Length: 199
Figure 1 (cartoon, one colour):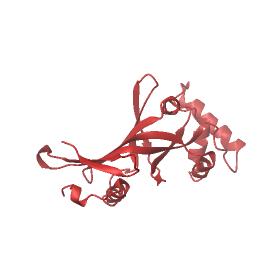
Figure 2: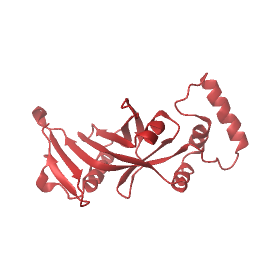
Figure 3: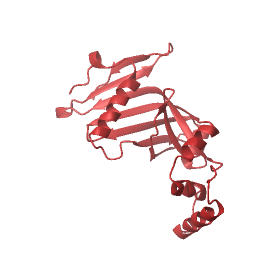
Figure 4: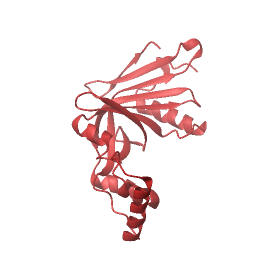
């Protein structure tokens, strides 16, 4: 089905929600998995997969360890990009913008909604740091499970981020490589400018 300007909504988040729902209904494997790209203050890039946790106040939300490589890069260079790709629907969405930390309260609310094992692992692991062996991590989890038999505390350096888009690009696969690409660019008035890109 062609991606046409005449049929595109004014708000790109409406189109994103539609495509995300389509991917879920089509059985796309882990449709919430996104590639997150960050860069150091000197411009050295890095990318990894994280989980998309929804849109809040017009921004894309994910969670991580603030002391990880991505956390350190975002602390000094708060610009990032994410990519969603759903082969089941032949769609890709790219988002680029500025990132900010979520509040401690918002991070705690999400953290305590996670399975207990995931909470303990987050508390035991200093993400991206060198560790001697897997046994060291497993031992730390066991000790923390005994120390906190009820509620696991939110780790000091763990929490949410929100990526507020500067632009969002929608890509749809078409025959003979003549793919459709529509990009929404945020304008000063607060709205969006829609433009077509060559495939």
